[in-house]
Image (cartoon, rainbow, N blue to C red; front, side, top):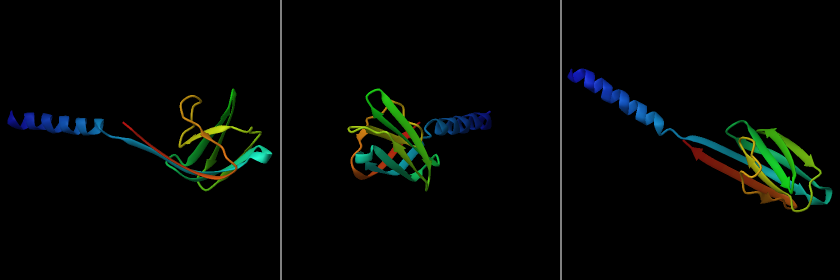
Length: 115
């Protein structure tokens, strides 16, 4: 009887240990704005998903793009004042606080942890 209760206790401890497991999501990218031409080049430095995702937002207009780690992509048709959100997964409009795109290079690093 004593052995049986120990097995139950060990099983409960393993189950509780699994409940506290956290998932990490991280992304690092470089965004180079060319506001005179209404464009931005996104270079993916690293991402826990293997892909960097970015969402440009200006008013009701959104433009999504992605690039694999080590790759880049250029987004055109951007207007002055456009903001962007990025992540290892595709950001949702309204689900992030946008960074304003500037002329020149911006380095972005984001990390989130969840359970």
